[in-house]
Amino acid sequence: MKSLKYILEHSNTRITPKENELKFYEITDKTELKDIIKKSVPQKPKNPHKDRGHGFWLFDEAIRKDENYADIGAGLWNIHYIKCEFKSETCGLISYSLTYWNDQKNKPIKGNIMHIFDIQTLSTYKGLLEFYFNKLEEIAKSNKCKAISLRFYDKGLIDIYSKYGFESDNNEERLMIKRI
Image 1 (tube, rainbow, N blue to C red):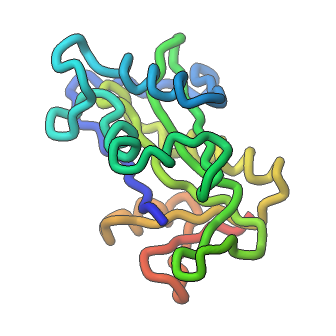
Image 2: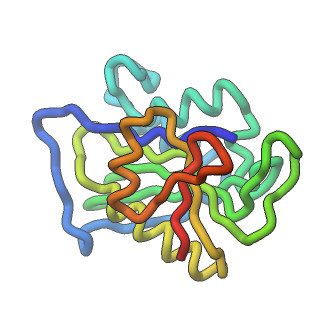
């Protein structure tokens, strides 16, 4: 199962939108997802780039490594995507699944748990994690999920996710769960 990678923005000209200024939309197909990723990059360079902080490089990298990552609502992970917009500009992407899979047993875990794969905010924005988690919790509740899970890639993120109600799971390494 992939680890959540929240991208900390490092631009000097960051914008912090208010809640009522953000709009969330479901991404419904692979072409739309790839277009959003491609359009997230300034003219040069033409591709998202991790080291330069250009565009939705995290999602671009994930799709390049495994094309199944772009199988919206299908495949092993049954992955879904949401884009976050501020003034009609896409500023964030989120990937999640309403089915949490146990990698070792290759089957869904019982208990109706939403799993967050990745969250990325473009570097010109900041402070959106609270809004993202609120939206994900709203989706989880509407789908009668009992919890939301995520995997962290860096122990330094435990404190950040704890602020939003996530607790470490003693049974699985790097897993955090928020009961709802």
